[in-house]
Amino acid sequence: MGNANGTQAGTIVTEFFDAYRAQDVERMVDLCSDNADFHYIPIEGWGRQRVIYGDGKVRTIGKTVWTQLIDSFPDLTNEIHKVTSDKEGNVAVECTLAGTQKKPFGSIAPMGKHFAVPHVFLFKVDSDGLIDEISAYWDGADFYRQLGRLEVD
Amino acid sequence: MSATTIAQQFVANMGAGNVNATLALVAPNAQVKIYPLNAEGGNEIVRDYLQQLATAFPELTIRTRRLFVGGDNTAVVEIAIRGVQAGEFFGILDQEKLLDLDQVWMLHITDDKIDNITAYWDQNRLYRRLAVKRQDRVTITA
Image 1 (cartoon, rainbow over the protein chains, first blue to last red):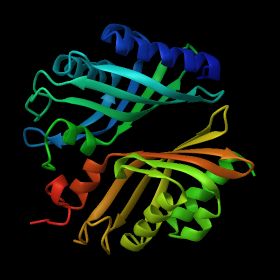
Image 2 (cartoon, rainbow over the protein chains, first blue to last red):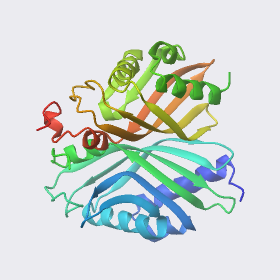
Image 3 (spheres, each protein chain N blue to C red):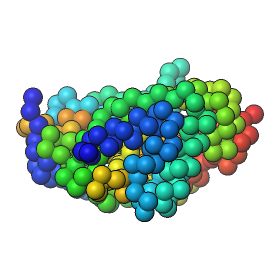
């Protein structure tokens, strides 16, 4: 499978963040291939007798995570700071995600606190102009601290 | 040297614990941001990180998961570091725990030198791996 060129890939990824800012999860998913991989590296915690990871496919794990985030942080938004792309469909987006917690998120009870945390997203865009892989990194300690939780679980 | 080569050398030197060789690739007036350490400034930021990493994790291994160079000559490097703690690391006491941590380093290169560094990882995972219980008491592990 080939890959999108740098300009095309950067445009598609920017559109993805536009959809995320508009909280249009269906559009975010539509911009991804059917089998797109999803890796939210900091998501790691204990569920019922097992460790839960933010790892899987966009159409299963990714859609669920995005929906839960928007539900817990109804004013969730993003601001892109820099887009770095090559001619092979690789794109890195440095951005800040921000929102105010209104409902529980994972094990974090809502205290009405606001967070704004720097993120880097790494994308692979295929030759059809669809996102085929998403990986995201942020400092979960900073995220939890801003939401009022200092315990490390 | 290409940006890819410089980025590869940066990672290899970091993995070998060779602080001076790593810093030799960085411009004297480089701007450095390491978000998980809440650290922003010049070369001293990356020097401090590299020195503490080399001391605390002397048997560190680094696997490069992804490396590409953007049109503005920024190398995007996604790595996985792995090692057993053998000394204090940014105030975290040594309990001989295994650290495995994924990171992204954004290295902007001008005239064969890295003049801008931004690093991302999940400090919560680092705390968890090193048995820290609370963020406000990283030196207390009981």
